[in-house]
Amino acid sequence: MSGRDVSAFTHEHVFLGANQGRNERKVWLVIALTATMMVVEIVAGHVYGSMALIADGWHMSTHAGAMLIAALAYRYARRHSRNPRFSFGTGKLGDLAGFASAIALVLIALLIGWESFLRLVQPVPISFEQAILVAIIGLVVNLLSAWLLRDDHAHHHHGHSHGHAHSQGRGHGQDNNLRAAHLHVLADALTSVLAIVALLLGRSYGWYWADPIMGVVGALVISRWSWGLIRDAGGILLDTVPPDAELEGRIRGAIEIGEDRITDLHVWRVGPGHCAAIVALASPDPKHPTDYKAQLGQIHELSHITVEVLPVTA
Image (tube, rainbow, N blue to C red):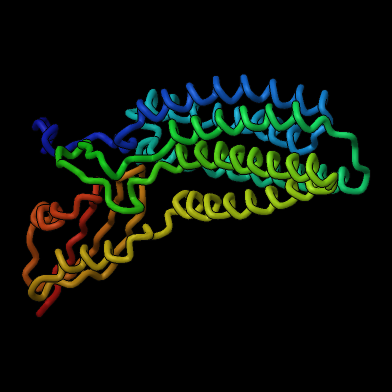
């Protein structure tokens, strides 16, 4: 095809999430809210002697940093979405950021658990009234941030570089970068609730030990949440098969018509709402690869398809 125009057979590899820009703006807003409340809680925790309040503040400080990673990941992915150095685009950069944030969250949980243990061994005086007020303000900020970062991708649709209209399939459209940021503010909200409960118990019954105990409980719950994100984001980074158990079956159902049979199939996620597939098939009466791609056109999650056809003797 030397000298001929092949532009009709080429396509871009832009596999960003449907709400990439909007999610980035929401994360920047939450960073501002979190950083402000972070300073208030850390200072108040030291002044009033509450470990739960200090823990909540330090949560916010590290979470603000983690959300900064999320925001920068969005920006980098957007700016380099058409960079040919990225063979399958930058859609998975958010999963990398989410994985890193989840690791950071586990380390934070371990630190809080340790600090709470030390406070359990050596209790300190607590100014309950002031600490409760600041914890309530922190909870309000956390709940507002969690609402801002909610992932409502299931209600939206998007286009992609092959020109098809794609709906975001269950599981495939999840933005792990936004999920990580959301998890961080949920962890903050949890520690705020636990701080309030511990402070109320301490004020009413003199249970000073409730404050560090709640810190330990929060650390355990946060670690459990983090593990789920580590597992999901890590699986995407390692190109594991998408969680939709029906996807491979739908691909086989679309291709294995008559005597055509798939001999090798690889499916993986390349970005929120985007999956890629390599399909090798054998047929005694093979068609052109573009015909098989057309058969797969009904599967909206597939944004990048490679087909290999092997003729065989019937």
